[in-house]
Every structure is written in C-alpha cells, then in structure tokens.
Length: 278
Ligand SMILES: [Zn+2]
Image 1 (cartoon, protein in one colour):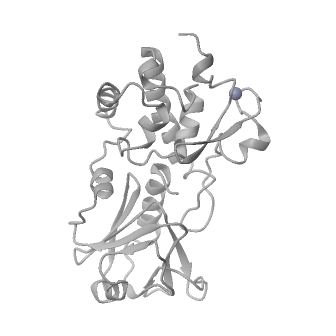
Image 2: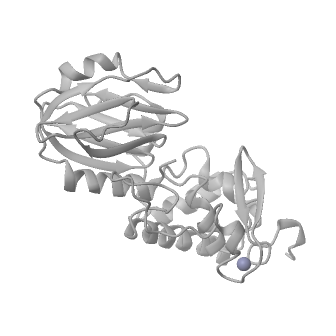
C-alpha cells in the first residue's frame, strides 16, 4: 500500500513525466473489481477528460491527485497502482487507462481495494479531506500538532495505534511505521502514556527523519513507482528483514499479528513493554 513517501514520489514522477500531456482517450475497467470505487460510471471519465491536458499532480496523506486544464481532477488512494507505459505494453487487465496523444498511457490497477475518483475539487470523503488537510511532517506546525495529539489521545493507546490509526497522521501507515519505531527504539505495543519526554521527542524526530529518508530515496523497496521499479529505500523491518536480522544489532526480527496487521520488531532494540523498568 502507498504511504506518504510513495504518494509524494509518484506525484513528483507524474509532474516530471506526464504533466503537459494531452489525453487522447480514457478506457473503463477491462473487468469489474468488487473493491475498486469510481465517482459515477468509469465509462463517463472519457467524456470528462478527453482532449484535456494534465496540468499538475500532488501527493498528500494516502492520496495522489492529478489536475486537468478543464478544472477536473482525478485522485486515487493507497491501494491503487499507477504505471506509465508505452502503447502496446498495457497489461491485459486494468481498472482505468488514460491514453495520451504521444502513444503512452497511464494504467491504473487495484490489488485489494482502491478508489479512482473523478471530481471538481469537491470530493467529500473523510479520508480525502483528512489527507488533504494533514499537516506535513516537514512543516514547523508538525511538532506542536504531534504534542497536542499525544495529550489528546488516550494514554493506553499503543504507539502503533497512535501513529497509524484514526487518520491522526495521514500517510503514516503500518508500513513506514515499522522503521520509525525501530529507529525510535520503541515496541509497537508500547502505551503512549508510558513514554518519557525524551522518548516522545525521539519518536517525533525519528518519524520526521525516517519519512524524509524514504522520500529522498524514492519510496520504500516494498512498493513500486510509475515505471514499476521498487523504491530505493531499503526497509529495515519488513518481510526481508526476517532473513537478514536487525540492521542495528543483528538480533532475529520477530513477526506478529497485531491490530489487524503484521508487526515486525527487534526484541533487543525495541524492548517489549512488560519487561521494561519504569
Ligand atoms: Zn536490534
């Protein structure tokens, strides 16, 4: 799933590679996907977009949004894969295809679920609105916002739940979370009410620095860009780390199910909450 580093990089790649292209045609899904959502009928996207030019693209939270010169926009979220391909290289099945006059196309596919929404800037969806209005981790407003969230949230919330649920921090999900917590030396199940001031500060600075590093390297190696290439950021806590061990201490990484997702942690660098002295 795309998280903040990937949506920012995909938007940048779209600006660099498709901005200025004129749309020749838009094709609806080759076959229906039960969990792919559109605004209205995807067959109507062609009429709305044909002959228009992509003016801009932005990434925020869990969304990428493209702007067209007739005022229309398409936003898509974290479960949607987009690829730029040459004519003849299109996959057999897709959920939407935007063909350009220069014989290239943007192809949208969905694995588990996703939304590809055509709108006029008025998309009224909770996740979209929260992503759009999210405070960037790289803005000066982020630290005060983070501290306010710590105070406003229940003390028995785990750091994983605090960072990656309820859209407090759109774009920080179960993926980027893992390396942020390793860097901060915090176990995913650690309760936020037990964090010392130093640990609160460390978590904040690690969230910012890990996200920055992931963005600078073109996203995580577990996700792909618009050319189908993996990001250059080598994830420290993901499936591959189960084989290689902890990059910080060499210990074997532990994998567990927690809160409807998989967590990875290093039992040495990220002490389990019940063994901690406080
Ligand atoms: Zn370790």
